[in-house]
Length: 496
Image 1 (cartoon, one colour):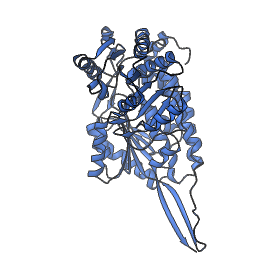
Image 2 (tube, one colour):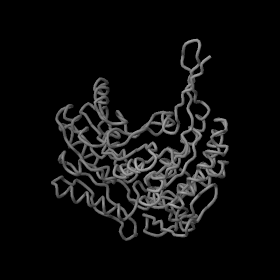
Image 3 (tube, rainbow, N blue to C red):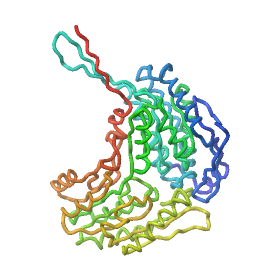
């Protein structure tokens, strides 16, 4: 994190200006002229008016991407050349890191220290990693009879539509865009209407890095209009989406109603975090549990929102989490000392507080938090919130809240812990704290989750895949496996 004081971030925020035009075919495009306001959750002020795109703008962006794919140089470049372009983009993201971090913080409320130190680090590393990977992929030549030659080649899938949410607007965009571009595809990105500005700046930097026109396009607008148009478009070959399970169902329907495009979904979560009595460090387990649910204001699909604790240590662990919740500094996300910023907007704040009220009504015990704070700023701030005595069948235990709300459930034996952990429609992530290696392996295999962390949470790097099971989606982001979503396998059989 650079040594930029709060006052300087405030000055930059006051001077903040960014064009809200679409980025289509390598240039800014105003579209039909309709706009919508981007409201900063830190103070409720409008920070920009952004082009409100619909079917016409999506058509233009897809047509540009199709031309770039069918007749442009990008898919035909040597993979090393595509890689160098992605590395140039990573370099530009590093150069403009402070500006990008400020943009993310203003549009979605993330603390500036996290925007700079975590969000921007992640997206820079993503483009750098896939830039370095681009020319490391190999095709296959299976062993056949002596009178034939078989070739199995990976070819770019075509035009990719990517729809991403607001909670990690650059990281999640990068997880879609970077492997798709490395594979030779072209992309139309539809960011969330809550966080379109950082995506537009990313696209402009991509053009500056030398990506040909039409290779990366950004259309801004809402989901029911622009997102639906992209999902239904017959000239989109692949659709990659991160967001809610409910919206993921829509994209599957859009594919069925159009051209049967492949749809890759990374959806919701209600992740369990299991703490056993033999955890190597109970204080660390509790501190990590608190960090995991309150980081990014709890607005994470992998947030460990269900803390499953053995009854013999439940009160000790819960009390440690409650203490940490009460210590957290909630405040202006432009203050480098802030640990938890603002929820993304008033509608989302109301949704989260509604879940809290339901939790109280259902009989769970509210240990701390639950109230809106700093309302006088115009921002949407909420206290870190912890419930215990949560019933397994309650809404607190079943539904994704997507906010800083932790539900603590006690169990008496390991089999019960696994049953509770798997008693959800989701299967994105899970945590386990134990000193026993055999227990770690057995429970990790039993948990229905795409990622299992043992004695840690939210750890990993770009070498490992990320994605979910059950109604948390399909396909994988990150790692070389992500390229499978954006390539087609072709078999060529040559009779000799």
